Image 1 (cartoon, one colour):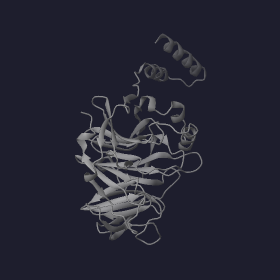
Image 2 (cartoon, helix red, strand yellow; image 1 turned 90 degrees about the horizontal axis):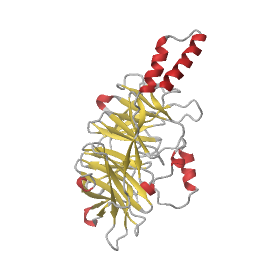
Image 3 (cartoon, rainbow, N blue to C red; image 1 turned 135 degrees about the vertical axis):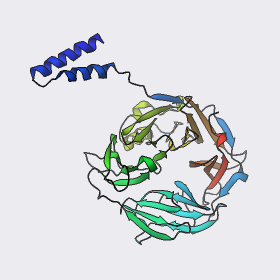
Image 4 (tube, one colour; image 1 turned 90 degrees about the vertical axis):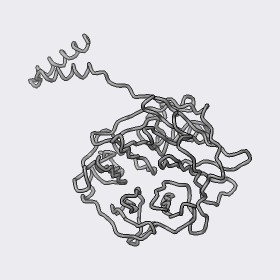
Amino acid sequence: MIELLSYSKRIYRRLIAQGIAPLWIVCAIILYGCQNHEELAIYEVDLDNPEVVIINPDSIVWLETSDSSLIYDVSNIERLGETLIVQSRHFVKRFGPDGSFKGNMTKKGDAPADFIYFGNMWVADSVYHLYDATTHLTKKYLEDGTYIGYEALNYTPTQVFEPEEIYDAGEMGVFYLNRFMGVPPYRTLFSYAPDYATEPIAVAGRERCDGITTYNRVFVDSAARRLLYWEPVRDTLFVADASGVRPLMKIDFGKHSVPAEITAPNGTYERFSALDKLGMNDYAYPMRFFQVADGKIYFFVPAGRNGYICCLDEATGKGKATRFTPPEGSSLLPQLFYKIEGNRVMLSVIDEKKPEDNPGLFMFPLSLIAVP
């Protein structure tokens, strides 16, 4: 405190000499220095001693494989009525609850019902929404794939606002994840407005500094009135609201943690390049598909050939990893995607002996992966 006061006096004398220092500046310096800045919470997750869940073949809903229904990996799933809307990169297909193929929801193209660049998707008011980041139109469809029109942005994209994805957070307002500009000065990562009719403003705290994109980078945690945001090859989970973007927690995987010198660079490409130079490894990355259920945070992370769904309990500070493994002699393998629906979870799996077939969805209760 004595050193801080001495430093404050030196600053004050310098500003007085320049004729620009009222007393409140010194007070602000002292008060700032005396604050107890909270350290970032660290959650430890032990991947070497996880809970183990055997993938039950009888609990898998296989997505029908045909020439018209073929997809890659699962990027996202939304449920509309009795229909599973499955996004696989730039494909959007409709499947029944038993996995039967029901047709396309929409497709990439130039027709009015098509999209050019997939931004993100959501279901609201019994209508499927897809935001096209090129046309800046939100396309709308009924459960059977009928196209019913679009909504345009109320404000023209500018140097500070051009959404790549839109997140309607209900009473919290609307958050826009901005596109990469290419050259500095960069846009802020998010823009925000209390509703669609209000002009968005920049959300401080983080910039969009590269053009690398991954699906499902944001989760709207309505109960906690916040957004969760994550980046590839980072050990940090971020939280966003109208006041800004800031780190929420650091996740420590022990010997499986990616070294700090690799996670530190701002550029995603730089982080991946540094990681690639290490060659084959069993580091835990990338953390993806963060979700919240019953007040706990969940995410998926691979390490080597193993896949884990991890659970973090903010109330207790505890973490838990659950590894999914096939039955003995089976060629089933978990993929990255999973989704929590109420008290059950669907995890995307493939059969390595049938590489041409669509993935399946392994269904299991949420209690299997939750921190006790």
